[in-house]
Length: 99
Length: 136
Image (cartoon, rainbow over all chains, first blue to last red; front, side, top):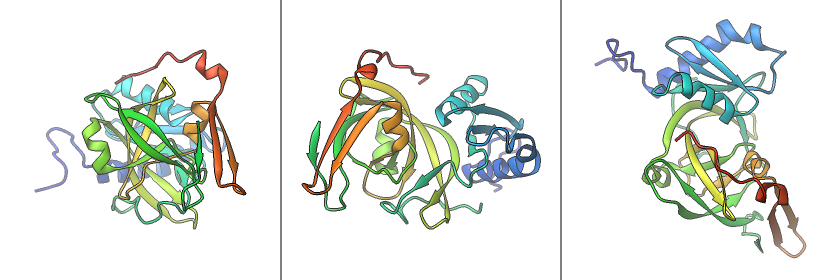
């Protein structure tokens, strides 16, 4: 059985993350960087719509108002990751998928 | 609020966390100033709170490597002040609060490594404006 339920457009979290990274890299990075560096973007990967906010909470709240039932992928514009994590919890964070 | 630094030289405090399906529950959390996010908590502690799964995201670690996580929306309450917070899930044992959490609550944190103590206070500005904003 495929991970995707194509009839219902339901994606696994891994697929949401992969599609979100692809959409950002191929379509949004050149539009948003460097002008919006430091802001957060929540991407709805089926419609490819995106929502920018000064904080991750702001971006996700705006996205959820438009798509209340969807899972988003979040990126910090111009950065490798949305947050930095120190050494306190190293090795205990990852949920494995190919990024 | 004040206390003694834990063996990892980090302060530990107690805060209330809750989601859409639960009453506030008290948790001991580690203040990790090397973490730039809000809250990171083990999946097994997050599930009973009924947190809303919101997003996938990638974090960077101190060595430059990247790791993946899930982000949930929940509520946090500190000294009677409550706010919406983004909670990332981890597979460890500890709940961490990071610099975004400290910033959103206007926390003043003073660490005394000589005496192994800390002082944790919320600014008067926050105490005077604490209506919760929630979309749960």
